[in-house]
Image (tube, rainbow, N blue to C red; front, top):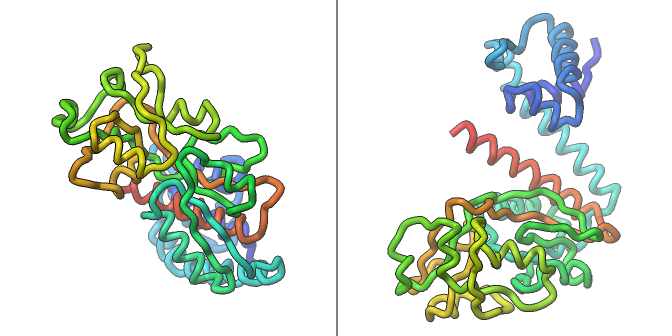
Length: 304
């Protein structure tokens, strides 16, 4: 009997998710189609690979052994196809990526993996000014950019979204609120917020430095800056506070600034964007790998 790659792929995704609905979402098929593919594979193998009840999905012992043997072989097959496709589509060249937040965790792991897989691609990194998240992409100075969300630009493609964390408020260690361990969004009414000046759209600036608390209280305006380092320097001297994504707060630790999580604000997040008219094989392959690594990280976090 012949092999059906779609059945094998479906089984491996289900073995990760242990959920028929999430498996369908990842494969862009219906839950019933997932069931059909698994049933077809079990008929082909001649035994049950998955146990499904109203409460849980689990691999049978045979299914677990099958997954352990199949996953490396499938990975090698997919890598071969990807490398051949990349060569056919012209992967060689530069990939210039701009960033607003530090290169840590999932992002750095993806860059390392990408460079090892495609040594013919020269990856260049460029820091973007905090006040202009989208300009470098539009001007062609970078091929793609890792920016703070939200992104609502009609000419830009939003790829993988990752690094979802609570916002942190940077404050001078001398500020009265710095003595606490966590803040409420309503506490922002007592802190002049440092914002950005420049071409960033208003909707984006409003998220990074809201003008009102969720309860409707006005948030005082602090100085406007163009770069993160300008903002942190003003924060350290007590000129105001600065809302940052969790990754930035963890990376830019300094003795004169405290970073306090703000518990009831929407999560901060980072996203990879590129111009819809300038998409290349290098961009799409990097985005795909970043998306896959993000999903694996989320699955590990859920399991842990």
